[in-house]
Length: 220
Image (cartoon, rainbow, N blue to C red; front, side, top):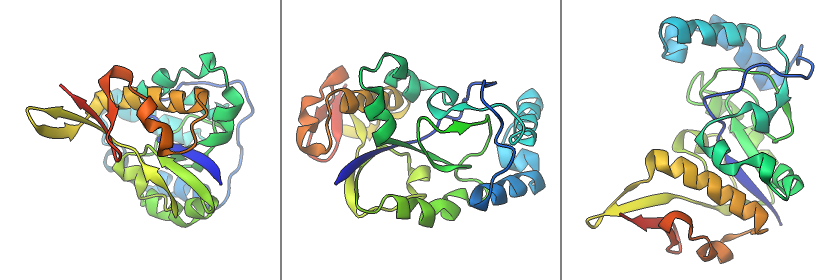
């Protein structure tokens, strides 16, 4: 059974690109682009002033702007921690990792995409993608590193959800922003160590996290 690692996109994205624009799209992506154009911008983006103007401009040009591989388009803490350019086994990463995008569904690291703005909890994107995404994950073993909003866009029969949790004075709490970094490091480790299921998760002890059998825990 093939292993697939699910990760979220980043809200921050690199500008520009060297590859041809998409020009046209179909299906759910086309429907969402239409919905974006018809939506009330402030409600859709939750942004103000220059940031709002930038988001509107980016989506207005989504089919005409240059594209780049998704792994280069997405920036942020998880992707910085993965540090794709220094991976020894990039082909394994490209084959095993899928990014759950609000606008494009399941995206491979090498897929060429434009800059865009759409959170997966807007315009019912997660619900729209659920059937299509889940069909693509059939008969796969899933290592799920998705936030709650993105989990609503997938279903799978075989797999495990991986959470990173902090424990302080006996109380557990989500790892939060720090958790994004360790998730990226974990994805990198999965690829470089050719780990395909949870049987070897206990070998990952970076930054003081320990696998308890159902979660990674760090006492602080």
